[in-house]
Image (cartoon, rainbow, N blue to C red; front, top):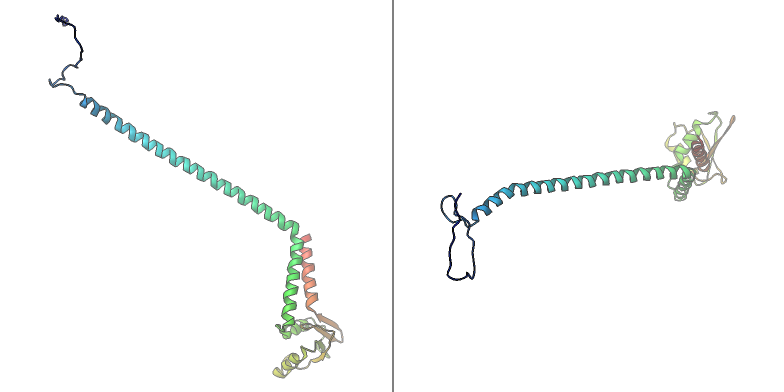
Length: 204
């Protein structure tokens, strides 16, 4: 162990600076080496911390997205339940409204003459209980069309029919008289049957 040295000074020192011992190679130690070593040691730690923050941030965004999707799914389910309940409560009203809309549309088309009497008569003839001595009553506005059908199809099913103008029959309607019974084809009755069918469907 080195013995301490004693220095005798002639007068007191005004200031004192302590200098570190020389480095292994004999050159003075200016501290730069230690600073570089510390920076080199800290660089991997900083990179790892940054990667960890990035992963945590990505996980947080993923979790938020999952929660948002779950919320949307819950809301969609509640809306579907509300829709089903509303339809179930007002199904009868919806059916009546649909029939009323159809009635108004049909009435407007008839008033404008936008219809064909031929399929109306053909549908009624299918339900006729007999094929001989048939008299078909139609609105006077529809009679010219029926007579035209007889002329255009002399060998058709209208050739042997007798058409009669009847003001009690509405336009686009017809009444078929046969020896075995009467067949009606009235637009209003068709709508009434549709409404009844819808009502039965609601109750079943």
